[in-house]
Length: 313
Image 1 (spheres, rainbow, N blue to C red):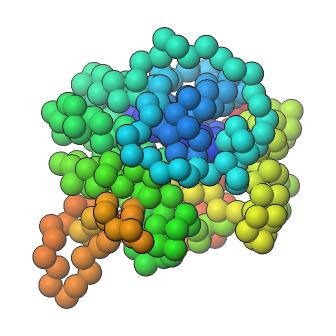
Image 2: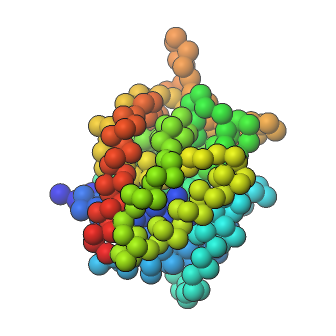
Protein backbone atom coordinates (compact mmCIF):
# COMPACT_ATOMS: atom_id res chain seq x y z
CA UNK A 1 0.00 0.00 0.00
CA UNK A 2 1.69 3.19 -1.16
CA UNK A 3 1.20 6.58 0.43
CA UNK A 4 0.13 9.40 -1.87
CA UNK A 5 2.22 12.52 -1.34
CA UNK A 6 2.81 15.97 -2.77
CA UNK A 7 6.31 17.35 -2.25
CA UNK A 8 6.29 21.13 -1.89
CA UNK A 9 9.88 22.36 -2.20
CA UNK A 10 12.34 25.10 -3.13
CA UNK A 11 15.20 23.12 -4.72
CA UNK A 12 18.11 23.38 -3.27
CA UNK A 13 20.75 20.67 -3.10
CA UNK A 14 19.08 19.21 -0.02
CA UNK A 15 15.67 19.17 -1.72
CA UNK A 16 17.15 17.39 -4.74
CA UNK A 17 18.62 14.75 -2.41
CA UNK A 18 15.21 14.28 -0.77
CA UNK A 19 13.57 13.95 -4.19
CA UNK A 20 16.01 11.14 -5.04
CA UNK A 21 14.75 9.30 -1.97
CA UNK A 22 11.05 9.92 -2.45
CA UNK A 23 10.68 9.34 -6.18
CA UNK A 24 12.03 5.80 -6.01
CA UNK A 25 10.74 4.61 -2.64
CA UNK A 26 8.11 1.91 -3.30
CA UNK A 27 6.19 3.03 -0.22
CA UNK A 28 5.51 6.46 -1.72
CA UNK A 29 3.51 7.61 -4.72
CA UNK A 30 4.65 11.13 -5.56
CA UNK A 31 1.58 12.67 -7.18
CA UNK A 32 3.13 16.11 -7.66
CA UNK A 33 6.14 18.27 -6.94
CA UNK A 34 5.07 21.84 -6.32
CA UNK A 35 7.69 24.58 -6.44
CA UNK A 36 7.94 27.47 -4.01
CA UNK A 37 10.36 30.34 -3.59
CA UNK A 38 12.93 30.11 -0.81
CA UNK A 39 16.40 28.76 -1.48
CA UNK A 40 16.03 30.41 -4.90
CA UNK A 41 13.42 32.72 -6.39
CA UNK A 42 10.11 31.45 -7.76
CA UNK A 43 11.16 31.11 -11.40
CA UNK A 44 14.40 29.32 -10.54
CA UNK A 45 12.60 27.01 -8.11
CA UNK A 46 10.23 25.91 -10.87
CA UNK A 47 13.12 25.40 -13.27
CA UNK A 48 14.97 23.37 -10.66
CA UNK A 49 12.04 21.02 -10.08
CA UNK A 50 11.94 20.32 -13.80
CA UNK A 51 15.73 19.94 -13.97
CA UNK A 52 15.86 17.39 -11.14
CA UNK A 53 13.06 15.35 -12.72
CA UNK A 54 14.82 15.38 -16.07
CA UNK A 55 18.09 14.26 -14.47
CA UNK A 56 16.41 11.42 -12.57
CA UNK A 57 13.84 10.47 -15.24
CA UNK A 58 11.56 8.43 -12.97
CA UNK A 59 9.28 5.80 -14.48
CA UNK A 60 6.22 7.80 -13.50
CA UNK A 61 6.45 11.58 -13.76
CA UNK A 62 4.58 13.52 -11.08
CA UNK A 63 2.65 16.67 -11.87
CA UNK A 64 4.57 19.92 -11.50
CA UNK A 65 3.29 23.09 -9.87
CA UNK A 66 4.70 26.50 -10.75
CA UNK A 67 5.94 28.71 -7.92
CA UNK A 68 4.44 32.16 -7.45
CA UNK A 69 6.27 35.14 -6.01
CA UNK A 70 5.58 35.56 -2.29
CA UNK A 71 4.14 38.87 -1.16
CA UNK A 72 6.42 39.67 1.77
CA UNK A 73 9.60 37.71 1.17
CA UNK A 74 12.78 39.04 2.75
CA UNK A 75 15.78 39.89 0.61
CA UNK A 76 17.45 36.62 1.50
CA UNK A 77 17.96 33.23 -0.07
CA UNK A 78 20.24 30.23 0.34
CA UNK A 79 22.23 30.53 -2.89
CA UNK A 80 25.53 30.99 -1.07
CA UNK A 81 25.29 27.40 0.16
CA UNK A 82 23.59 25.96 -2.92
CA UNK A 83 25.06 27.84 -5.89
CA UNK A 84 23.66 30.68 -7.95
CA UNK A 85 21.20 28.31 -9.61
CA UNK A 86 20.42 26.49 -6.36
CA UNK A 87 21.79 23.23 -7.77
CA UNK A 88 25.52 23.50 -7.25
CA UNK A 89 26.05 25.78 -10.27
CA UNK A 90 25.36 22.83 -12.56
CA UNK A 91 23.30 25.14 -14.79
CA UNK A 92 21.09 22.41 -16.14
CA UNK A 93 19.40 23.25 -19.48
CA UNK A 94 16.41 25.57 -19.20
CA UNK A 95 13.07 23.89 -19.84
CA UNK A 96 9.73 25.30 -20.93
CA UNK A 97 7.43 25.97 -17.97
CA UNK A 98 5.06 28.69 -19.17
CA UNK A 99 2.00 26.44 -19.25
CA UNK A 100 2.39 24.93 -15.81
CA UNK A 101 -0.46 25.42 -13.31
CA UNK A 102 0.17 27.28 -10.06
CA UNK A 103 1.40 25.12 -7.21
CA UNK A 104 -1.55 25.91 -4.96
CA UNK A 105 -3.96 24.88 -7.76
CA UNK A 106 -2.23 21.52 -8.15
CA UNK A 107 -2.42 20.89 -4.41
CA UNK A 108 -6.13 21.76 -4.30
CA UNK A 109 -6.99 19.61 -7.32
CA UNK A 110 -5.22 16.54 -5.99
CA UNK A 111 -6.70 16.95 -2.51
CA UNK A 112 -10.18 16.96 -4.06
CA UNK A 113 -9.37 14.03 -6.33
CA UNK A 114 -8.04 11.88 -3.46
CA UNK A 115 -9.90 13.06 -0.33
CA UNK A 116 -8.23 12.07 2.95
CA UNK A 117 -5.45 10.23 1.10
CA UNK A 118 -2.86 12.91 0.28
CA UNK A 119 0.02 13.97 2.52
CA UNK A 120 1.76 17.25 1.65
CA UNK A 121 5.43 17.30 2.57
CA UNK A 122 6.69 20.88 2.92
CA UNK A 123 10.46 21.04 2.41
CA UNK A 124 10.56 24.82 1.90
CA UNK A 125 8.55 27.85 3.03
CA UNK A 126 4.86 27.03 3.44
CA UNK A 127 3.67 29.76 1.04
CA UNK A 128 1.70 27.41 -1.20
CA UNK A 129 -0.21 25.71 1.62
CA UNK A 130 -1.10 29.10 3.10
CA UNK A 131 -2.46 30.19 -0.28
CA UNK A 132 -4.68 27.13 -0.33
CA UNK A 133 -5.81 28.02 3.22
CA UNK A 134 -6.76 31.55 2.15
CA UNK A 135 -8.25 30.91 -1.28
CA UNK A 136 -9.98 27.54 -0.84
CA UNK A 137 -10.15 26.69 2.88
CA UNK A 138 -12.50 23.74 2.24
CA UNK A 139 -9.55 21.89 0.71
CA UNK A 140 -7.44 21.70 3.87
CA UNK A 141 -9.70 19.23 5.73
CA UNK A 142 -9.44 16.93 2.68
CA UNK A 143 -5.71 16.44 3.22
CA UNK A 144 -4.61 13.43 5.22
CA UNK A 145 -1.65 15.23 6.76
CA UNK A 146 0.92 18.00 6.37
CA UNK A 147 4.55 17.23 7.18
CA UNK A 148 6.65 20.36 7.71
CA UNK A 149 10.41 20.51 7.73
CA UNK A 150 11.34 23.68 9.58
CA UNK A 151 11.17 25.74 12.74
CA UNK A 152 12.86 24.91 16.00
CA UNK A 153 11.90 24.13 19.58
CA UNK A 154 15.02 25.17 21.47
CA UNK A 155 17.68 25.28 18.75
CA UNK A 156 19.28 28.52 17.57
CA UNK A 157 18.37 29.78 14.12
CA UNK A 158 20.16 29.04 10.86
CA UNK A 159 19.29 32.23 8.98
CA UNK A 160 19.09 34.69 11.89
CA UNK A 161 20.18 34.25 15.48
CA UNK A 162 16.70 33.03 16.34
CA UNK A 163 14.89 31.77 13.23
CA UNK A 164 15.02 28.79 10.90
CA UNK A 165 15.11 29.66 7.19
CA UNK A 166 11.74 28.28 6.00
CA UNK A 167 9.82 29.99 8.80
CA UNK A 168 11.75 33.25 8.47
CA UNK A 169 11.16 33.45 4.72
CA UNK A 170 7.35 33.51 5.02
CA UNK A 171 6.27 33.61 8.68
CA UNK A 172 2.71 34.71 7.93
CA UNK A 173 2.24 31.63 5.75
CA UNK A 174 3.73 29.40 8.43
CA UNK A 175 1.40 30.81 11.07
CA UNK A 176 -1.61 30.25 8.79
CA UNK A 177 -0.59 26.63 8.35
CA UNK A 178 0.06 26.15 12.07
CA UNK A 179 -3.45 27.46 12.78
CA UNK A 180 -5.13 25.43 10.02
CA UNK A 181 -7.56 22.60 10.72
CA UNK A 182 -5.17 19.89 9.57
CA UNK A 183 -3.13 17.08 11.05
CA UNK A 184 0.46 18.30 11.15
CA UNK A 185 3.88 16.87 11.90
CA UNK A 186 6.89 19.16 12.39
CA UNK A 187 10.50 18.07 11.97
CA UNK A 188 12.39 20.99 13.54
CA UNK A 189 15.97 22.18 13.25
CA UNK A 190 16.71 20.52 16.60
CA UNK A 191 16.39 17.15 14.83
CA UNK A 192 17.53 17.92 11.28
CA UNK A 193 20.69 19.75 12.35
CA UNK A 194 21.64 16.78 14.49
CA UNK A 195 21.41 14.60 11.38
CA UNK A 196 24.67 15.82 9.85
CA UNK A 197 26.92 13.86 7.50
CA UNK A 198 30.69 13.89 7.07
CA UNK A 199 32.58 13.78 3.81
CA UNK A 200 32.57 9.98 3.95
CA UNK A 201 29.01 10.31 2.63
CA UNK A 202 30.53 10.79 -0.83
CA UNK A 203 31.89 7.23 -0.75
CA UNK A 204 28.44 5.87 0.10
CA UNK A 205 26.45 7.58 -2.66
CA UNK A 206 25.07 5.58 -5.58
CA UNK A 207 27.46 4.78 -8.43
CA UNK A 208 28.14 7.64 -10.82
CA UNK A 209 26.86 5.68 -13.81
CA UNK A 210 23.32 5.71 -12.37
CA UNK A 211 21.17 8.79 -12.93
CA UNK A 212 20.67 9.35 -9.20
CA UNK A 213 24.37 8.82 -8.54
CA UNK A 214 25.39 11.16 -11.34
CA UNK A 215 23.17 13.92 -9.94
CA UNK A 216 24.23 13.44 -6.33
CA UNK A 217 27.95 13.34 -7.18
CA UNK A 218 27.49 16.75 -8.84
CA UNK A 219 25.54 18.30 -5.97
CA UNK A 220 26.82 16.92 -2.67
CA UNK A 221 30.52 17.87 -3.13
CA UNK A 222 29.41 21.48 -3.74
CA UNK A 223 27.51 21.41 -0.45
CA UNK A 224 30.59 20.22 1.44
CA UNK A 225 32.81 22.86 -0.17
CA UNK A 226 30.32 25.65 0.60
CA UNK A 227 29.94 24.52 4.22
CA UNK A 228 33.72 24.44 4.65
CA UNK A 229 34.47 27.75 2.94
CA UNK A 230 31.55 29.81 4.22
CA UNK A 231 30.70 28.25 7.59
CA UNK A 232 33.97 26.63 8.61
CA UNK A 233 32.00 23.43 8.96
CA UNK A 234 33.08 19.93 7.88
CA UNK A 235 29.61 18.42 8.23
CA UNK A 236 26.45 19.06 6.23
CA UNK A 237 22.90 18.47 7.46
CA UNK A 238 20.39 16.90 5.10
CA UNK A 239 17.31 18.69 6.41
CA UNK A 240 14.91 17.61 3.69
CA UNK A 241 16.14 14.03 3.44
CA UNK A 242 15.52 13.75 7.20
CA UNK A 243 12.00 15.11 6.71
CA UNK A 244 11.27 12.50 4.04
CA UNK A 245 12.68 9.83 6.34
CA UNK A 246 10.28 10.91 9.10
CA UNK A 247 7.42 10.10 6.76
CA UNK A 248 8.59 6.66 5.66
CA UNK A 249 10.23 5.59 8.94
CA UNK A 250 8.33 7.46 11.68
CA UNK A 251 9.29 4.91 14.34
CA UNK A 252 12.89 6.16 14.20
CA UNK A 253 11.64 9.42 15.72
CA UNK A 254 10.18 10.29 19.11
CA UNK A 255 7.10 12.50 18.80
CA UNK A 256 5.41 14.86 21.23
CA UNK A 257 2.06 16.62 20.89
CA UNK A 258 2.66 20.34 21.20
CA UNK A 259 1.07 23.76 20.77
CA UNK A 260 3.02 26.00 18.43
CA UNK A 261 2.82 29.47 16.92
CA UNK A 262 5.04 31.53 14.62
CA UNK A 263 6.21 35.08 15.36
CA UNK A 264 5.29 37.27 12.40
CA UNK A 265 6.05 40.80 13.62
CA UNK A 266 9.20 40.75 15.74
CA UNK A 267 12.14 42.80 14.52
CA UNK A 268 14.62 40.32 15.97
CA UNK A 269 12.35 37.29 16.12
CA UNK A 270 10.64 37.15 12.71
CA UNK A 271 9.89 33.50 11.93
CA UNK A 272 10.64 32.12 15.39
CA UNK A 273 8.50 29.11 16.28
CA UNK A 274 7.25 29.30 19.85
CA UNK A 275 5.81 26.34 21.76
CA UNK A 276 3.72 26.54 24.91
CA UNK A 277 5.69 24.30 27.27
CA UNK A 278 4.41 25.70 30.55
CA UNK A 279 3.30 23.35 33.31
CA UNK A 280 -0.25 24.35 32.44
CA UNK A 281 -0.23 25.15 28.71
CA UNK A 282 -2.97 27.52 27.59
CA UNK A 283 -2.61 27.14 23.83
CA UNK A 284 -4.45 24.29 22.11
CA UNK A 285 -2.29 21.46 20.83
CA UNK A 286 -2.01 21.74 17.05
CA UNK A 287 0.72 19.36 15.89
CA UNK A 288 3.09 16.55 16.71
CA UNK A 289 6.76 17.52 16.87
CA UNK A 290 9.78 15.29 16.47
CA UNK A 291 11.82 15.69 19.64
CA UNK A 292 14.37 12.90 19.22
CA UNK A 293 15.72 10.53 16.57
CA UNK A 294 17.74 7.33 16.44
CA UNK A 295 20.53 9.13 14.60
CA UNK A 296 22.70 6.11 13.77
CA UNK A 297 19.83 4.17 12.26
CA UNK A 298 18.46 7.26 10.51
CA UNK A 299 21.83 7.95 8.86
CA UNK A 300 21.94 4.37 7.63
CA UNK A 301 18.39 4.51 6.29
CA UNK A 302 19.04 7.71 4.33
CA UNK A 303 22.14 6.22 2.72
CA UNK A 304 20.27 3.01 1.97
CA UNK A 305 17.43 4.97 0.38
CA UNK A 306 19.82 6.94 -1.84
CA UNK A 307 21.61 3.79 -2.93
CA UNK A 308 18.26 2.20 -3.76
CA UNK A 309 17.49 5.20 -5.97
CA UNK A 310 20.75 4.51 -7.78
CA UNK A 311 19.73 0.90 -8.35
CA UNK A 312 16.47 2.06 -9.90
CA UNK A 313 18.13 4.52 -12.27
